[in-house]
Image (cartoon, rainbow, N blue to C red; front, side, top):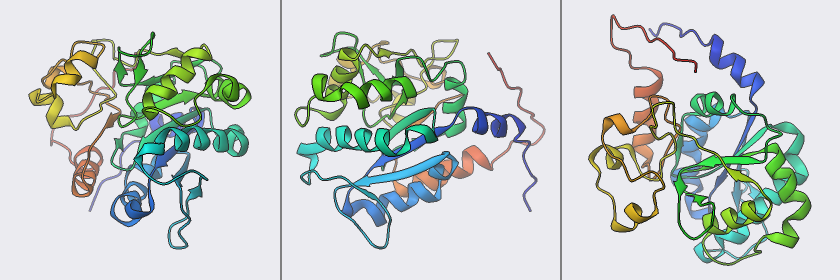
Length: 264
């Protein structure tokens, strides 16, 4: 028997902050990864769609007409956002791009976004400080794009954004900068990170690759105290760990401890 949670605040934010989540996937990952996103965190999005470059009768996806393979992720991303602008623009206020091995605590995403208006030209994610003047956000860590940012992309991308070249997240960052969409600061009030381009263990223990220390905008901090209590994303999450996270986040409760929510 599980006792019900008080979801009043989360339910109110579900209606107030509408989030469309689109998942970058591929035919070979539909059964091994994508379906597990759908079974876990994806169900908490207001709208959930999967973007692939092939149709599959057993797993509905949005088919994007681009060449298959990792060399064309920029084209896939640009085409996906264009499709979403044309078909889903009025169905959400914010548009989250994530990979099929990203885990998202959607309630915490809504909490962050609730302090901002979808009419702001802004997007949020794990901030890298290199290559693009204002920096850019890790693709694997996910990034949330405002309605206004999507509008600017939908109306002007052909003039400012690469069709298919370079790294997907870098090119999206260049595109946003050219469209005068700013990079938002997603850290909490204590300066702790909310979006993460690796799994939690990497940030806790600091087992970073050398490149990351050069890329991370905020100094590649490590340890439990570097991660926000309201963390939003983690990347490189195996399927079994997705279900473990579901249990630890949404079911496990320490007896005798009631949580106090810091709504600031």
